[in-house]
Length: 305
Image (cartoon, rainbow, N blue to C red; front, side, top):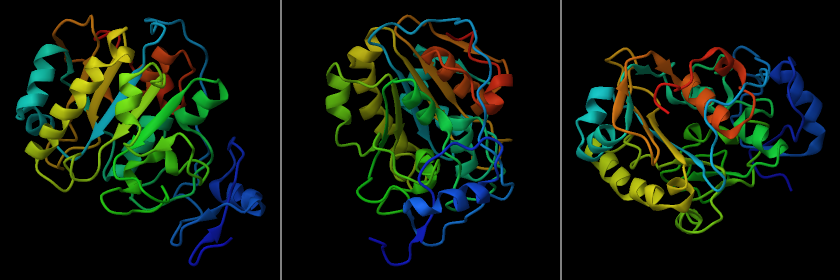
């Protein structure tokens, strides 16, 4: 049933150089409803990022281990590292000390982290994008994944409460809410048991990620969340936690903190230049899937892992 203020747009198919508007028109007959105010076309009408060639693995993710990605908000590297728990993680594990976000505002960075492209987007609006991204990549290969969105209680394509769709990149690819996009409800059980997905993306709500609340509030949230990850079987068996910030506060050239944590890592730092495409490249290499889009040319965290 069509909901008030909704528009009928796409239900499937993968972009392969087709403009986003053409994808929307092709798929509109499938009856998937998008919220009102949706842009039917990205500013650049960019195609879906393509997969690069297979690469020999530099590190193999152990059986039963997972890659965890946690994304925080709007702090320079110095501001994040001034917080006690984040500073403790940086001292204990590996710090990418010359890591930069790609853009302002939030959305283009989240898209880059999950697809290897910003699609030419320069705002936080809802844009219909081709079905793509690491979630689609993993699903096609039968690799388990989940995106945990704190505060999600309704349509993942609309803001509600402290859930912000602009911090949920998976809601944009194909214009649907994938079944793997869930609230924080199952997170504790998934971490404690043997059912942790191979790839776990975690987005805190707009207070806990530091967007609407203080850096100290965000740090206190990490001090509650991260120990659960580090105690999980999926991490202790050789998993990898990648903790980053989407963008800085606009004052430091978009330099942000990124920490790599794995059970056997020694405390270290790298001054090698990295960015969000590097994080995606590292994630895809660990999961043994081809790199997407600009991640193909990115330097993975080879000196940190």
